[in-house]
Image (cartoon, rainbow, N blue to C red; front, side):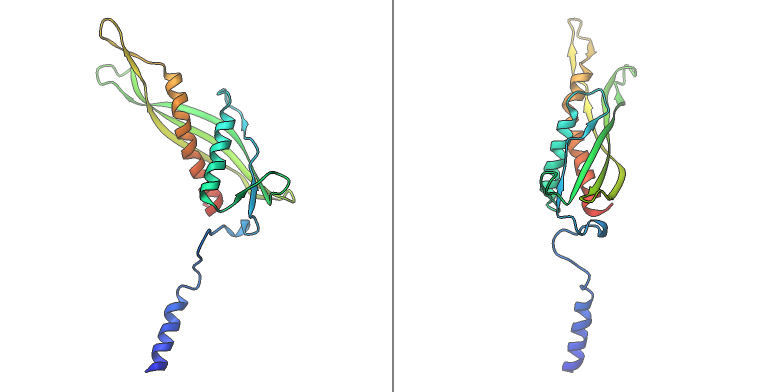
Length: 178
């Protein structure tokens, strides 16, 4: 009876054999413990967006904890990125005037790659997309007609939200491999 119980106990524990506690990196990044993140390149017309995106990605990498952030000289790998596109598309309009948009969707596209210390490409050039929606602020005129607000400043205020979504997706793709 004891032998049967011991055998069943061993088989039950054998099912947990592949599980790991802590960060589970993809196989191709198994030797990467530290990562450097230089400023992303900006291919858009939005000024100073590269600093916002780079800082947000670094903060997300620190929060994830899979890789330690360090400078380029001591890093096992380097994450390089390029901001390629920021698009704004109408998502909702007023029911009385379909030409007046009240809500927009904002998408931020970044292409990134990870290279090892030896210059070998660990993660080939891949896209990551961050999205958010934002409402257009409206102002009432003297005739009590609603006019469209400043869409550009509303978009500028929504960029940090799209950047956070982008950073979450990018770090998940790197640290989990999908």
